[in-house]
Amino acid sequence: MVFQDESGFSLIPPVRATWAPRGQTPVLRHRFSWSRLSMSGALAYRPDRSQAALLFQITQGAYNTESLIEFLTDLHDHFGGEKITLIWDGLPSHRSRQMKTWIATQRHWLIVEPLPGYAYDINPIEQVWGNIKAVELANLCPDTIDDAHTAAQAGLERVGTDDDLCFAFLARTGLAL
Image 1 (cartoon, rainbow, N blue to C red):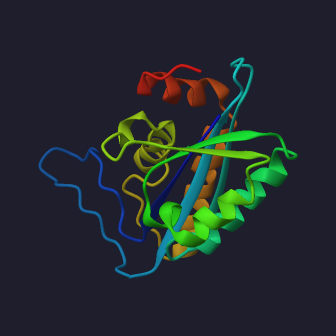
Image 2: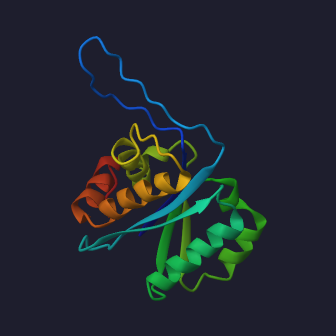
């Protein structure tokens, strides 16, 4: 079972609570840029709860149908052709004619189930984005988009190597395998 989603970040930091000496308000000084990176992630669980895996890609700009098909192809390769049930939201790229046509040709390994439009909170990959933005990207004021990329990748790798954390994200949604 694989939960998939996309998220983005830029040079503008996600502001989180911090500390400063009494009487000195903390100030975040950051560069302003329209440069934006997007992350696509897939949080995969074995039905017997023996293993969890986080697979991700980071790209310039936003994900579209073509880049998501590429991500799903990489996902297929990673799992060695095993049959996958993919659960994702209603992003327009997920519902495009091109995506539907491509999915129809992949039925031998891919089953797609959409999440209800109001149910983002039952997608455990949303917890991954929140965790990374609260830890590695929180109050980060990078000089370049590459610095932000490095921090996000470090966070994704940290989460991806912690099965307990990945299962905790699933438990927080209230879903069971």
